[in-house]
Amino acid sequence: MMEKMLKAACVGVGFALVSAILLSLVVTSLLYFEVAGIVLMQKVMYVSFVMISFVVAFIASRIVRVRGLLVGLSVASVFIVFGLLYHMIGVEQSIGASFLIRSLVSLVVCLAGSVIGVNTVKS
Image 1 (cartoon, helix red, strand yellow):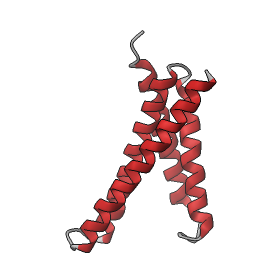
Image 2 (cartoon, helix red, strand yellow; image 1 turned 135 degrees about the vertical axis):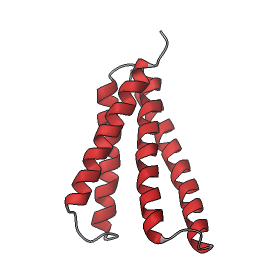
Image 3 (tube, helix red, strand yellow; image 1 turned 120 degrees about the vertical axis):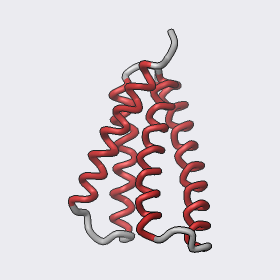
């Protein structure tokens, strides 16, 4: 069980890093060539974050194949901790209601992704 959790963590982190790098390239290109504005890119980045967290939870739970809620909770907690570090470093100055709402959305999306991932595994 521990080996599966470690493999799921490695695959999830790898997918999240590759997705974040590709997303940053796309967003930077669109902003550089003035195809889209900053407000639109902020919304695209948030939607992408939600989709990435869903896919990471889905993939991790398919690898582990049991305890979907636990996997989803662990993936969501990692994303929330990264969000806290993002705020603590000083990129965004205050932790307000928007951070709490985004954390709650991340939790729900990760739980849904992990439950769906566990339930789609063929026995």
